[in-house]
Amino acid sequence: MIPKKIIILLVVLLLIGVGVSAFVISTKKTPSNNSVVVPTTTGTSQKSTTQQVQNQNSQIAEGCTITPYNGTKLEFGDVVTDVRGGAICHFTIYNSLPVYNFYLRGNVEYNTIDQIEITKGIESKILVQKLEAGMGEPPVSGENFFGAQDMNFDGYKDIRLMSWWGATGNTGYTYWLFDPSKNIFVENSDLSSLSNSTPELQTKTIATHSVGGMAGCIYNNATYKFDGNGKLILIHSEKQDWVEESKSFIKTIGELKDGKIVTSTVAGDCGNL
Image 1 (cartoon, rainbow, N blue to C red):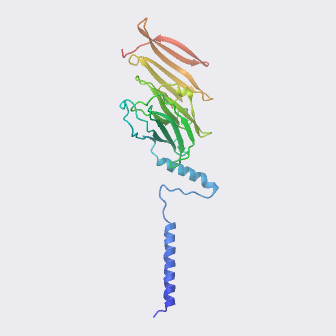
Image 2 (tube, rainbow, N blue to C red):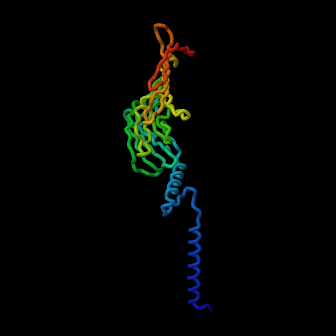
Image 3 (cartoon, helix red, strand yellow):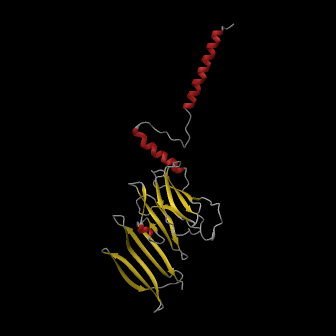
């Protein structure tokens, strides 16, 4: 018969062996794809931060989600978008920066966006900036009323909010350019005053287009470029008007020469009429 002391000793050794095995298994567990290892050494901290940002951004679907409003039914709901409940938008402004979250606060009385509250990071609730929106009228149905795009060609995305629109297709936006030195968005009044602005990456210019009527035969096209100080400069324009006296169209073309816009006038035309 085995002595009692020996049995107790064997049980204790068995328990210790099981515990050590479990510890070894747990420490060798393979981390998931979304896990981030944060190093304690200074030399590798920047690399780990960048990896975390990339993982965060990959988990976010860029775009906007409108928050439903549970109050009264919206009048002209087939013409305008109901933003009374606001919206939440997510955009990557720069690859090495955390994802930016934009909380658009709706105005119940006017069906507009009054404020934009901004946070950074997927789960962050810390407010980093608040913008006064000033939307002039409810956004037209079917259009992206809020978005992010690099407008000044510095590699960082800027944001825009629809401010007005017309039946002829003219649309105006309020623009805020991202300032990487301060990590904030700054309103740009030059861009905000234009209609249907489109950045042209190849030429690093801003093209604009507005229609005045007569099936698009009355129009105003322009091309702008940012100077070294960030000021938007007109470099080309083409405007066509209807002259009632002569019952004809006239086209005025402007070109930037020696710092001034030089204009010339030619006979206009319109194939739609």
